[in-house]
Length: 448
Image 1 (cartoon, helix red, strand yellow):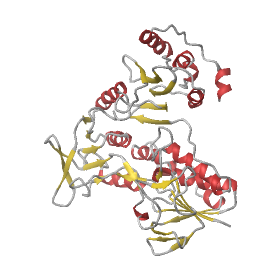
Image 2 (cartoon, rainbow, N blue to C red):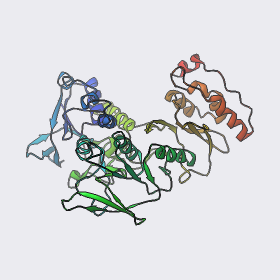
Image 3 (cartoon, one colour):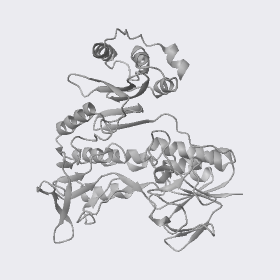
Image 4 (tube, helix red, strand yellow):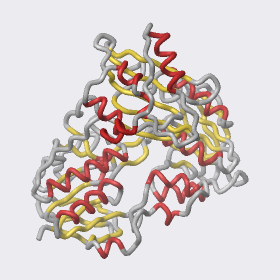
């Protein structure tokens, strides 16, 4: 019987283990030094904010693993000996494998800033990071100001967490507008406003120069490239993440920024695979990046690889891009491709609508010649994934999207609807005369 060993108990590794067990009786071992049991990483912030306890982030009861014959090892892998098919753990023990899957995720970026390893300087990715933040910033008496460096999704999550305990936050973002390498200008501008309205000191076009230490080796201030010194007790490094692969450097496994894999998620070494944040495709799939540090794609990689390891080879084919997140209390969804002004292609045109007073907007991308629908971003309006997936597959044009936009709305009953306003602006912007159709459950269920 094959022994499949998975390093990492995040969404990728656990999804893989669950699907292997559904398909086979193979021996499965998951190794992780982060936590005894799988938990939802995206829910960590709500533990700090008091919305749930850590045990509530665990989707499965503790008995689930034994019942499903998935062995769990709490340990840190220091070395992979691919010739011997053996893993060496930090405590000196070893584990042999027939098939090895690397699912070790990411770690916060550090760019060599002076003082980046001081006490009080941390990222926000792991369970240990959450525990450290609880120690570093339990309240606004112990932490009278925090400085967050890096303007991505993790940065805004950390800012929201600290503000929930009324800790003053300064947010250093090197771009001229928040996340404007991803978001179109109108959306980025709206999020700038939203951050400031939540009493976060947003400093755009500002870089960290160094972190200053006190006499005890703890951060006491940061210096920016504007020459400003900002006193603080905590510095959050949230300038992106990088694959967690340092332990593989002498393994013979081909590495780039991540673990190099083909479409079947195979490495250059026989019987060794990689999935999730740490996997790097030799070439990106379509418009996707070679490394996809996203919860959804990690889950899909686990599902695909399970088939391959159970003798049903399946390529990783993620389909149309989609993602979701929250910017404080504004929900964000994206389907297909809506590029920022910094990276959009010559054929890409945008239609943008924003509510006059609420933090609600959408941006629709389409081909300016054929009018083919390319993608949609939405803030503050929930949309149905299946609807946009179908429209993208069918190569629908933007007029079709506007006509049947009500079908895509997934907001709960009694929420205000905005399709009339959206379509009216579209008609005015592009000299159209489209009348939006009423929502049809028959159409919706035929797609779903």
